[in-house]
Amino acid sequence: MPLSPAEAYEQIVSATRPSADGRCTECARVTPELVVWEDEYWILTRAEHPDSVAAALLLQTREHSKFGQLDDELASQFGRISHRLVRILEGCPQVAYVDVSRYGADRGHFHVWYFAPTGDSSAGPADLHNVATKLANWGGEARA
Image 1 (cartoon, rainbow, N blue to C red):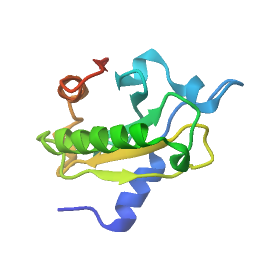
Image 2 (spheres, one colour):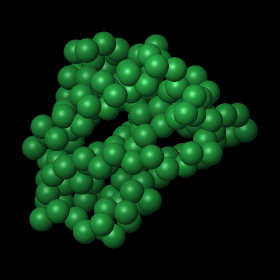
Image 3 (cartoon, one colour):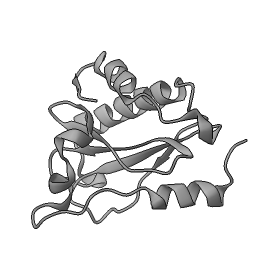
């Protein structure tokens, strides 16, 4: 059964990432063990999440930029990557659907969250290696 809007919101705000240590908050949070996929312009990292979420991922630009500052090429890349990522996640057996969310606009990088709730909390997490490998079929490097 799908989550109510209140349940989905609670899962979104409860996803956490480690704190930063004095440099750009987003750059400091990107550690090798969190990287799922990356290319020259984009990086996809995983975040901690409750068991009722199969995957919580953050896609962000490498350059310090905000949403309205993306050039046409980066904006186009975002659309393609986002579309592919949602299709890949929704193809995972553990995933009921994918919520795409943007919040925390005061950060130094354009970023978007992808939350993939499970249809059943006993289903376990999504296979991020599989997700990364499929995304890398279009370019970039799988890291998970």
